[in-house]
Length: 304
Image (cartoon, rainbow, N blue to C red; front, side, top):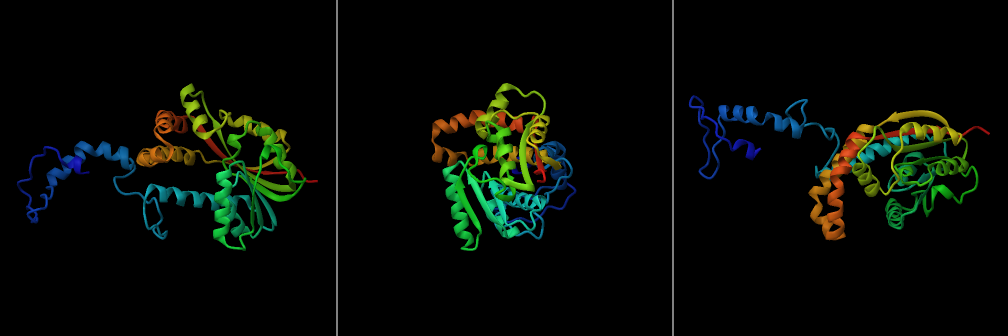
């Protein structure tokens, strides 16, 4: 806003001049304020939003947020999404739940449902972080974490009352195998909440490649392909919700936070890897904005 105000505007000779301390800049006159909006109104709309020229309610007034940063807003959004997934899974009465591609939400799921949650992941680091979260939650956390691959599960048939997989299936080289294995270990009539990315249109090769490299995934398929695979795996589809705006905003936020914290990232990962990532962020952001879709599905395994 300071740069916007530093323009040549005619002084308002009719306005009363505000009294300022000697070391303070002069307050802008009404004509200067008007000239700023005349010249830079479009820039404000491009950076604040075009619906209105005021601060938006990114955080509800009754939600405490001590440090209103983009990272805090991202954390708040993830917690809200986790609670939405718990409500949507609707696992009331379940005693054993499976978290495929586990993370922090496993602890929250156990706390909200009272069930025992088993989380699996292929990442050693994620496994360690999950153990830390479980330890912080105390001895009654009711969570167990293990290294596991959803395409080849070690659990017996019908081991779990229900399951969920949040943003994990996008990484799979054989999604139908993952769907079949999840169905096998969920009891008959059990629910399975699945989130998945899909592709619309025909993206440029560099933009799709940027997504697959940053996300460590095969290229996303059209949503119809996912529905076909779900039905072929034997599930009944209970609900489908299109939450694409959330994935679009996540792509925007990732790009902004990457630029904002680039120095930290370079210190952590080195100049060479950061330079490679620099070249991917722009195409990745465009892919998320133009070609990526995001859906939440609640499925049910067949009754015995």
